[in-house]
Image: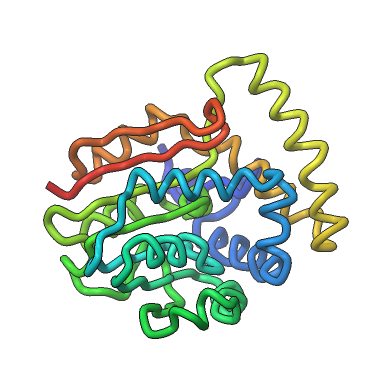
Length: 250
C-alpha cells in the first residue's frame, strides 16, 4: 500500500483525504443539528427509540457510574443512562458544537444539568485522562470516525479496568433479499426526507452511504477485540438493520 493510499478514506461512497474527512463530517452534522432529532424519528419511524432502550437494557446502568457518551450529539443516550442509573454522571462528547448546544436546550438536559457535562472533542484523541470512565458508549457515530481503530483504542484507554464499551450502529442484514429491500428504502426515501424536513438532501445521502461502508457485525467485533477488549459480543436489532456491540476492559 502506498503512502498516498494510506492517507485516504471514504466519505460515503467518495474517496477523500484522511485529513479532510473530519471537516466534511462536521459540516454534515452542523447542517442537520436543528432537525436531527426530528429526522431520526422520521427515518426510522421511531424505531431508534426502541434500539436505544434495548441498549440500556443490555447495559444495565448502575448508581454511581461515570459515562462517556462519544458522538453523543443531542444527548439521547446520556439522558436514558442517567434515568436508569438513578444517581450517576454523564459526559456528552461530540465534535460538532451545534449538536451539543441543541442537546443542552432539551428539557431532559435542563432537568439533569448537575449530572451532565457537554464537551467538544474528537473520538480519536479524547481530552480525558486514562482510566476515568466506567462506561463508554457511541451511538450511530463510530461509522463517521476517520480511523475507527484509533477511536476504539481511545475508548479502551479512558475506561477503567472492568469498564464497558457499548456501540450502537447501523449494520448489515444477513438475508440478501431483505438487504436489497432495505437499500431501496434507504437510498430512495431517506435523502428525500432530508430534503423535506431538514432542507438538506446531500447530508442524508452521505449518511445512507456511510452505513453501507461500515463493517459487518463479525468484522466490527474483530476490530473491538483487536483494541484489547474482552468478552466481545453483539446482538442484532430489527433483523440486523442495527446492531449492539459490547466489550469489556478486563
